[in-house]
Image (tube, rainbow, N blue to C red; front, side, top):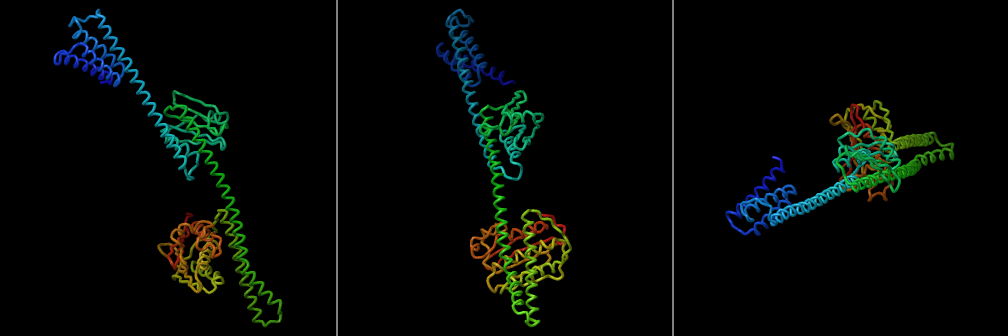
Length: 480
């Protein structure tokens, strides 16, 4: 049964109940009955509305006339009292229902405004939580569709001339109108389809256009959405600019750091070469054994200088984030032995202890890059080892992977810093001023290992730190 019919039936039932009670059960005077009918009409009008109240007022007038106004039992409108009663009930029903409807409408408007504010707040929070995993305007359109339960949202960015869509529905055929809105600030509306197109302005200049399809909304809410989208787009552009500035600064810092590091590293072999050649030139008649020893020193340091130059070239290549692997078959044992041997001139009074499982497999990798990664970790271990303390290197195969563990006996890495040691330019606070370095070595080593499909990790406790490299033995590892 429809609600209106049920309510009308209940209204008539209430009038009949009052009539029976006042006429049969609790005999009262006509004035009391009239006020009771009037109270009933007020209650019905405020609860259900005008139609039910009007019906109740007509029925109450008829009952009042038949049972309580003389002549009792005769339906007559001749007596002016009946007209007064009828118009009193009808007037009361009209005024009360209108007041009730107005109050209800205002309550609904207040609820709708509160919901609009909540949706705007949700949307503003979504803008702040947008990350860099996907295009910012794309996430902005999707967040708007979710916050306001829109069927479809299309955001046109004038700067990039791209359309970004959100929501489950389709919103096609309005590209030209969106471009027109973004260029000239025009607005379009299709009330039948609940479609709206509005310009997104930054100040007075249109920078984008927004198309919405879904439930209608007040102009104030639409303008609030447009303002939030404008703020979001401007925030995204500010972040892009900040990233570009930071990238340029880091690139310049990297170049400066590499130049300083190369100048420092090149001094040692150049000094040894110069000392050997100066000694030969100063005394050409030295014994053959002495001249051979000096030439051997010069040759060894020249080879070390060549390796430093190769490493510098590779580091510059890695900075450009273009890690092109030139894979070739490499004997694992020979690879590690060569890397350890190349670091012995820098070990000073520290022993480099190598323990290799036998036999070790042949790997398919970029020899120069992997050797550079091992050298970077060995250099780090030597820097942080106390005088006289050995640095151990253990090589073995485990679960189809080649594992290289490099352990030093330095102070160890503080727990709060262990998660950051592979970041570019990061150096521990306790050692950055005591031990020279650029903060690049571990970052470069990790990039190389990941490019080969391997992993580089570190475990540390006071008095011992171990870096562990794992590389796929089959040589088919994909970059991580």
